Image (tube, rainbow over the protein chains, first blue to last red):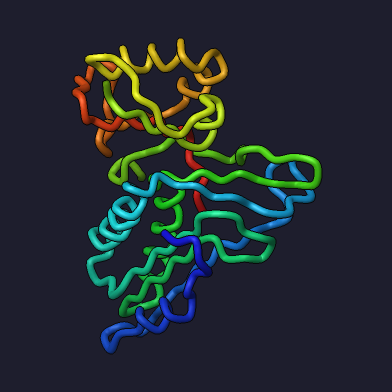
Length: 144
Length: 78
């Protein structure tokens, strides 16, 4: 968790291992619209700082237990205010083969969105409000 | 008195991010929060998870001085 720009290239480089032939990188970026809202100009993220990082680590652990061959897992998330196009979240997973790298990365972003205490506020010209696409907070082991 | 942490829509509805509230169990403390912050907070609370010291807790869970009770509305990371 950081209020600075996410080091996507560094995460990718760190994930490369001799035993891994696949690295999947997912970046979530700030988009100009959301459910029922056009003209979104920026997003503002806040988290429960004392527990967000440990929940991210639990997401990585959950991917490792499902795909034991996983090499490295990097999960990074921004807090604070972000403009259009900025990267808000990064998932990098390396694995011996591409199938498990893609599946584990997909699991990581889906589980992160459901289990890490982070909240997003959307700003548009003339207003701001909390994101409508919010999920009830789950435990890491509750995610299917 | 336990320390209460409020996030996102719960923080906004309560008008504060941190508070101290009385109660020997989570439920008593949340009732105190609803009477202090009003109906808008009560609505947010209905959909929120509640943690004590970082772990999910039900209304019957005991609360001691020094515990941290957090109100966590539906999350929207990513």
